Length: 484
Image 1 (cartoon, rainbow, N blue to C red):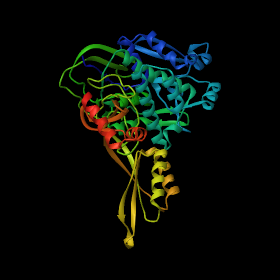
Image 2: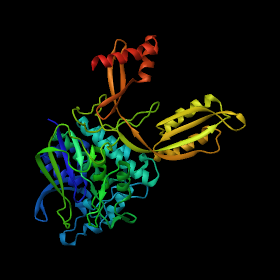
Image 3: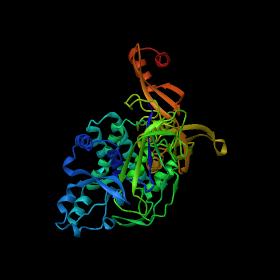
Image 4: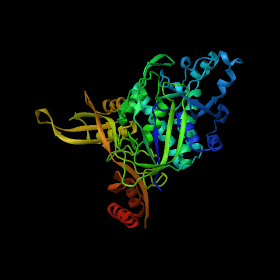
């Protein structure tokens, strides 16, 4: 059975609404608590749910009660602050805070000092997730969502994703929302995900250093990168939070109308407020009708591998698409083609040793370049030279430019922003008589369009066994085709 989920988001999407909908659809809260305890941060929060009404409709509200908030909670509940006037510090890109009125918490001055002095950056959060030994599918998805969230904020502020910091309190909230959502989807064994168009919302939201216009910058960046269809429903509130939007952009096979499906269960996740229409995220779960595919925005899901030919590939594994198994380190899930924004850096050089150019390649890859190459050219006065081209994500362009200026004799670098379509790549492993070789398999949708053994694996075996690289390459390809 091809089990799929459609997220209907008439009042937007937030992490707590996702988990509320999953619990309403049957995921046990006890299961989530048990698995989330593996993260090693259980002293920082308490989890609970409540059946609430939103415009007379009943739905499940999921709460993350942070330990710091509980210790500062007023004795008289009537004196608590209105959530619309409280700050929800999750994200801090040096000066910026992640925000979300769906996840508003009250903080006193003492708590504000704590949250501003302790941070968790992306590598630290990734380490928390990896160390938890969660189900492979859950780990892969959680890491992908956090990376997408960090990349969006980093692009907005012009810094590397690794330098984006999460405030300690807000990071706890985001970790629970993201990992909890991935756990719930894994528990339900859903194979494919679709999302409705997203409402823009309006007005402003309070952040650490003032108010921001809604939609917020990170949400706008995610919508732009994934070409998400949006519309206004006339509600001037923050409806799509960065966390919820990152979850959608990481998982979505497409955005738009629901696919043809036979509905088997419905999960209703409540937002924090009563709005003009029921503030509920509706999760439709069912069996997809054969021969149907998504419509609007199909193929704009999060990327899995980031390297081009000659570049380095990432391992942003995500939840599986049709007829695939859980993503494992050597067999990731098939995904549609992705479109992403890249920066292209170019310069021509005519007075530098070719050996120095070789060193520039290594330095650029270390700085975050996706691919780098040279081409022979004839410059003014018939001087022979090379055209050096480096491709990177926008957040790494300054670091890559610094390498080129430092390691070459160029006096100027041209930069341009482009869109590229990338095929999904899977890294599989085959056994040959000389040892194991990784195989890069490129797909367009579910169609395999290219299969290549990894150069380094073939080269290492060739050196150790004293045989030709071409022979290892041939045997690896033969082994892969024999297996399929």
